[in-house]
Length: 418
Ligand code: ASP
Ligand code: MG
View 1 (cartoon, rainbow, N blue to C red):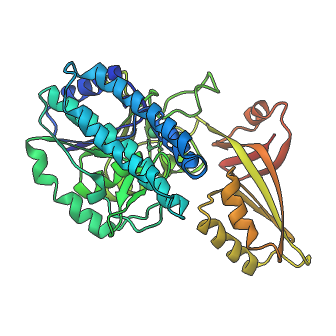
View 2 (tube, rainbow, N blue to C red):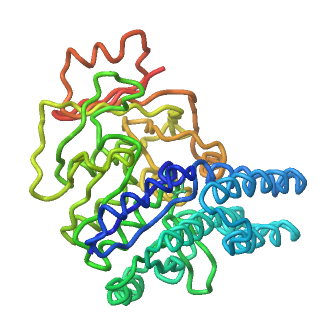
């Protein structure tokens, strides 16, 4: 059996959902478990709604209406029957948000976020399940919150692997005569609250399902030809990898190549399950295969450009050394604030770190050190990472930029610049 994951783009319009059905039909000889994301940019829209909920209830209600209209338009493009039960089913799912908006927000922002934002995946999967059924494909919808069990770290749910594996494995028999469809990105706590797994977490969900059910492979359908060595929107010479070993894919994801959620690879690698990244609009093409036996072409340098970076330099107030004690305290608090460090450099009296800009997280993190440490932050930077770099080509890439911090190893170059 195989697992297919369809991201926001693949389910962003009625036309794309029809293409999804075409892909399922091409693969009808396989047992399939399907994981879907929220439709199009719905997660962004629901994030906005969450922020509005704290400030202005009226604005939140307007935003919800826009989200509902967008889904309704997709449903209308899929189902001829104006009284199709899917309309009610979707309306009943959005009611969860309406009920929340009638109440005061929960004091934990991240808790609210997960209860609201998760609705995007629930609605999307319900519409697609109904449409598959409409197309005479025997389909069963399941609620991922009963299969992906997490702790209550909202917005970054940590998987309870034993419980999750047992739940997911119980699906195996049911796949014999039907397709199962579920949601990416979301999980559930032991108290039945909803958690999310971090932005772009649907890939990770698909990897969890794949490894727990011992799938033959996972295919992630994307709006790109496969995994590219650079963002084709920025570099016209970008080329596709035919194959990649897990370790290299892991590295690309780690440095921020915007192609696969970084947590996706490990569960697949542990279970020895190959990952295919394939073009959604050209399913016949080969895409990229990631597995143990794949060979890496080290002549291809991988170029990863991350924007909206912040460089934070931290020193002690009393000019003492930045010793291991400070460092361990700092690293712990970065982790607690869910700040992922993209680069770090240490000197006697300071440490400099680079990460994705997020004012809220930064403030929460620096506040508690104010009496001991000095923080100096520069925003609006770019981080360029080049793996298997060639000296001359780096010069090309940084032309006209001012380098603020750099780090070279034999294989990898990292430059923070503006
Ligand atoms: N819908 C979620 C997001 O946009 C999860 C995903 O698509 O992977 O982040
Ligand atoms: Mg996505």
